[in-house]
Amino acid sequence: MKDELNALREQALQQLAAADNTDALEAWRVEYLGRKGSVQALTRNIAELPFAQRPGYGQAVNALKQDLTVAFEDRQQALARATLSAELAAAGVDVTLPGRRPQLGRVHPSNVTLREIYDIFGTMGFQVFTSR
Image (cartoon, rainbow, N blue to C red; front, side):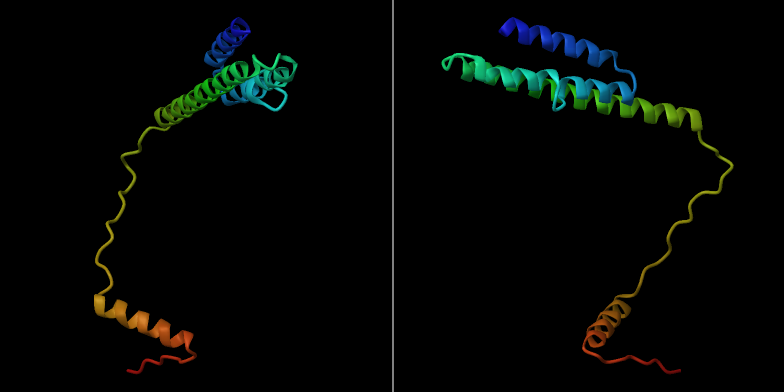
């Protein structure tokens, strides 16, 4: 049983390393971690084992599933980083574009307080009129 799990782990990790795009990565996830995947098939085999072997086998299958999930997430992040860096390298930076204008100033504290008071009175049904 342990040999079967180790062989599946090695095979899955080799195929995961060979996945070079998101479509291949998703196909790998479905094949191994999906509802009808290889790891799920192993969990169905637990019922066929003798009662004494079930806990150890179940723990080994859960450890395999967790290892493959972590490896999948790492590979997914690595592909995302590679894709982003490729897009940034292809796009480059256009230094002729104007820069962003800095935001100047902010609302005075007394105006902030007045606006809060207006909102409070507005919720009570009053209206605020300004005159010149």
